[in-house]
Image (cartoon, rainbow, N blue to C red):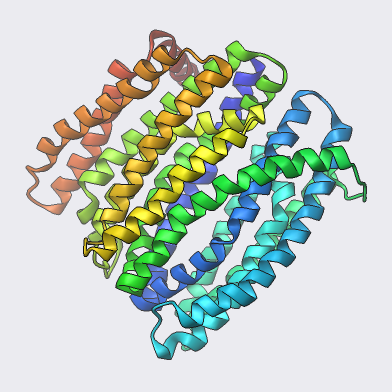
Length: 503
């Protein structure tokens, strides 16, 4: 019961964080696009994409750090916790040096020789590239402290600092409006300053509240070996994930130029804004998944996996259906200039994220088990098909949106594989999981989307269209409540509503 209360409390903190971040991020995206222009906005996104290609190092060690920290807390081993924090920090410093070297050699060569960048933008592109490296390294060094906060389930601080970060980035946008030149370079510089300031908050909080986070040089070969082994196999999956997202973005630039990158940047921001609802929900579940596995409570673990996957999908579905149907209207209201392909990119990206919500708890469970060698080899192979197939499709002359169709296909394939893997590793009741946690929610989504499309096609003007989209959102909630939730889930939600009304 206490675990469920922690999940509920942490979810509330994270949702408050997410709601504010989403609103501010969508507004700042609009202003940045207008202030920088389509060309500079696309340029900033694609340069960031080159740096993010090196983030597979970061993702690999982050997964290992979060897994081992939560695992040791589940076993109540604070000495081991401190060893992992210290070894992770040393590893991140080493990774920072490797990434700087790769960025200043391969990355810089690729930027100046292979990217489709207008000649008059090369000077700005190189400055933004250097500042993006700095921003990325600063974010990298924050990761062990971020992992410690999540492992301790201190979501209130995590939410608070995230809100400060997004407000500071909002102030940056207003500063840009009053600058007359070098806006792109100044934007990259100010973002780096904000990340540096947030790093200070994280370090001070962890040093003050978690004694085990205070750096003290120590070396434990066995612990480092476990961390490195887990990170090494995670690196395959991380590299594949980065290639799937940023690699395709770069391939698009090679074939279609920076305008397409602006459309992709907007589509990712829209989809990620919606996905933040799910990410925050699942962040609250993730430490409990690892801790329940570490303590051997497998019945509770299976329950967490099923509830996290199904509820995540339904939350995403309620948000996605109005967005998919009204995307053209929303983009025209939101942006002064809508780059080509933005609408179809947004719709298809949202659908791929929707499928991924069913996979996320399964992935976290695999991380908890630590048995990732075979898993990462298969997942990496599937992920890398994304960039290969996209390149082939572009080469034969198909339009840019086909890369997103490939992404949806990859998401479905990964979901099937993860279900099979978890079943073999933990004896998850696969028939029940497939029927109630996968097929049933997908059928409910497709049926609701089909029904809602008839309602929305009857639009006459902008105000009626908005009212219809709100009505479709309410309809989606009712459909989920009536057809998607079990009796126990309905009773739980009803009890929460009644208690709030009484208060």
